[in-house]
Image (tube, rainbow, N blue to C red):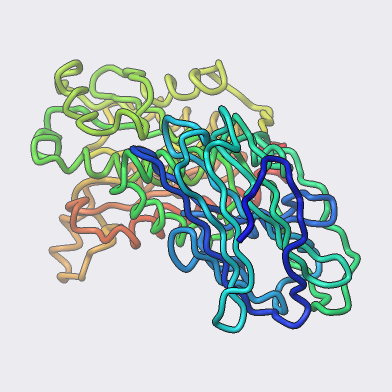
Length: 455
């Protein structure tokens, strides 16, 4: 049994003949919660592919060579790791207040062939104000080996991510090294991407503060993956009709639930974990952000501050949204380029009082990196839950003729709008909703760069 001293590096085992391993990390301290993670890094000690950062919200690598079987327990198949992964780094971080100096007992054990091959322990006396430590490494140097490390980081998980090359910006990660060891497969993982520190922090916050959003976000992720947008970044806005006819939707809590579903999509698109909220009736209102921190009861709070109004004017809200993101609400006839596009979810139950001005807003905004996703509450020819009903049902169904027109209107630089309707937002399964929200937007995303709108 070896005690881990701070900064010590000691070779503990030669793992040449044992490619299937299990690593167990544990730590205890009164009132503290620990998270355990594993970084699969390259020859430069960098996390050049974030799919090899295995932690509480990403529990295995793509091919399954590295798995978090339970909290602090990792299953490893060294023979299946790609040749770019030269080292597996096991870390412990403190969730919340406290430091590693408070650790009463900590240990890492390595099992090979069903029995313990190596073990060492660490205690708080070895550390000070650190909130994260590298406990040990399994590394490749001619053969696979294990070393105790004990390096501490006062900045916690964020500091560890920076240490291993995680990026807070959209900058591209360095390409993974291509040299391969003879003992491992030569194929490297495809499409590596940098770790976004804000995303990691947001995932943690959602686990702690908004577990209900986590499930929704996972469903949104599935739809984004199917659309090829799992790594896409956009600002998300929700524009809500507050005309008096919307009373039952607000009073029943259905608008709050729907807003949470859009927020969950926003956490996949926008790494600050928030969506911008706009309201419209006879007037338009920019009411700030809905986020993981304030979403609970957010809509009822708006109702108290912004009573329902006696009118429906799309154009005023669209002008306000364009001014908010692009500082312009009037005519535009040349493409505007921006790195991050804007996705607007526009929810209404009625027709606008100014269709001509609304058409102009859609046409002018087609030169901007902005996509309008209109959704009607009520029956229409584009009701996704429609089951026919014959001539008379079809004849009286179209309450959203104008929105259907916006979906298909000409004289636009690009097709920047889509529309569907539902009679009841709660009746639409979450998975179907997210698929509908991604029905035309991916096509716009692919076209926008070629038109000079995203760059």
